[in-house]
Length: 179
Length: 272
Image: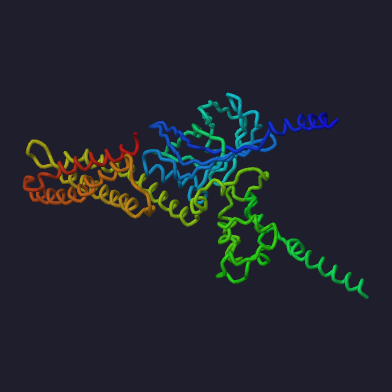
């Protein structure tokens, strides 16, 4: 009788054990935004993002943040102008939040609904696809966020009275490791 | 009588044991309103029960009074103490971006990512400085482009002022050229003023093609001083019916060099 009860308890506990709490930490990252103007194109790169993922009861909450002033486009004047138009001194962080089922972390393609806080505004990007590759104990997640500056009520900067394109895709290359 | 005493004693003991829990019941949610993401933070109204009122008193002197104390991270104490400084409405507004957004209890918080506090806190003052800088540089850019119009016109009217084949140019040609030259010089120095007077952002290291743009100013800046001086000398020589001679001979060389450096400065920030 006791054995049966013990077996039943173990069987009931299995799914819970399978969905044990876990945490992920962003080990290193490269975030690259790309701006396009008829006269030229430019990219701004940041390696300063930090992130964390907390999984609980089969659901994972992720948070990634990077200082706006950490993006380097190779031209300090452009970077300062970018900081000004994105109100980077007033809102110094770009923050990305998303939730995933824990099972999704094992897939080679992850589709995430992103909530991005930037320039004092919040925008949602649905079903953004990321590729996931396991590299030893770490996982590498890459993808492109199809950001638009109008989503954040940013006035597009102009050069020779011509504004940059509204689309500013952000390439994401992140390495995560379990804690 | 003995049983009555026992009852009184037991009631007193119960009241004493209940006291700490009753003090927790007076919680107000000010702290959690400001930092709802931070699960580790204690409600502020608990502070008087946990800490001595003297701000100079060290935290170690605070007696352990209940389970809530374990939730207070030591690093958060200065932010909570003293009460008047900790939760000003201004600070709540400064932290508005994402910091006060309520999320589920197991969601990671921005504070938990380990960024230095000064890096995640916004500054309206710094933003105002950036706004002023950008505004002045945009005027610099527009005026600089507009200056190219009288600059090119001055260059094109130069031969008419100088004359051809050893013959002096017409007085009208000289006057037009001089007028355009004065306009160019005036617009140029107004343009330069907006770049020179734009606020500098502390801690910013200049890099990229903007360095070339700035370096070229060391050519077209002095050129824009020298060219009108040489032009004035040449103008007076021609007005006296003399051929241009002496240092004034270099007026056109100085003008062309200045214009070339000016054009290069525009291109350096226009084309990657």
